[in-house]
Image (cartoon, rainbow over all chains, first blue to last red; front, side, top):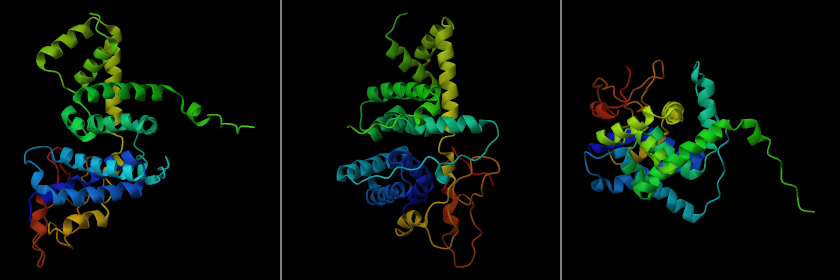
Length: 171
Length: 127
């Protein structure tokens, strides 16, 4: 038995969070994690002890997702009021956290991903670069833009986003 | 100093992500000391960073579905019946955490003692 397996097991919650914000569908996210774990076990020998296991697993998960997107499966979006995305009612931070979470969900996929990796998971820029398959400079600039986008999204009243006019059918 | 705006922005992000070496950091802080606008920007970035840390925390506390744990169990890492490897509780009063508790070696459960290192050092369980 590999001593790494319990460490991988401890990473499952983080893999699930990453997957869920990437695919925005609870069941498909877990499918993705399952595939990631299967692949990780198959290539366990390629992990270098002492390096960040979470980052290594995230690379695998991201690659699984890229492959899945290429297969073009239809997606069902996670509802914003899904209980799994609900925040525990927690004193003062509650409202702010809800707002931030909603704004975070409204970001583009690229912005959400880079923020999740660096700002939320606390990974290094280099690790995010490997996971996203983009150069380090791109991680830096994307991160800046993502934070700016989040700031803009928070500044914009939620009502405005909801009350977007429905496009009229062409007559 | 009139660096392009995007460059300044990247430096401010690097500052709050603790990505600057001491010399760069000193340089950025010197610029901040002269600019109320940039100082406010950094404060806003830090506030946002704090708020972001809470995003998705609840997902970390969900029980891990059996089908995911069983992927690892099939390779012989974890024996069945040893109790679930639950999420690490990172906040006080959160749900129980069983992941780093080395269970007493109950008879017939030789795998019990193997669970000790499930938690990341950065996220210790509160027992």
